[in-house]
Each structure stands twice: as structure tokens, then as C-alpha cells.
Amino acid sequence: MSKSGQKVVPPYFSHMSDEELLAWYAELQVRAMNAPPGDVDFDHAHKAAKPMTVEQLRHRLMTFQGWPGGLQTLDAGSPFHNLWHWLND
Image (cartoon, rainbow, N blue to C red):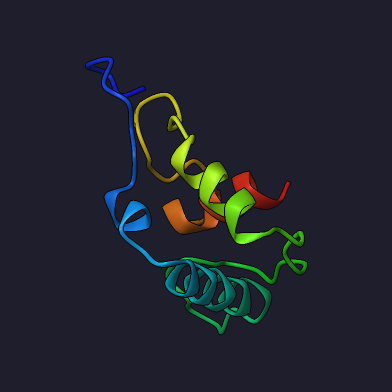
């Protein structure tokens, strides 16, 4: 929930086809595992993603309620870094 009590739903995920969503997740995984020096989203290398079906991935993303204070940097990474950990930890 957002501060206003509204459900937080990333609209770009809801409009992606299954193929687009899987491609986005695969690209995010490549960046997470092989972050180049100075990458703005990933400050260190990460393990491979947990295997998920497109339905599981879409459900995880669409039911995400956000962190207290909204989607923001919670540590040395970016919101994408934090989202990666939320999806895979």
C-alpha cells in the first residue's frame, strides 16, 4: 500500500505480454549476475534467479505492496536492486 492507502501496482508489468515479462526478467538477471563497475542498479554480483514460471513471476510482481515509504533505495543498491532481492531471497 502507498502512504495514501492505494494499492501499489507497477503498471508496466501489468501491460507486458508473457514473452516481454520473461525477457525483462532475463535481462534483469544478467545485469544482477554480471554487474559492471559503476552499474547504477547493482553494486555487486548476485546469484542466479530462482526458477519461476511466468505466472509465478507476474503474481509476485502484481501483488507487491511496496516497502514502507514507497519503492526507494533501502541500501547501497537501487529500487531494481531491492526488487531483485525481494523476488529472489
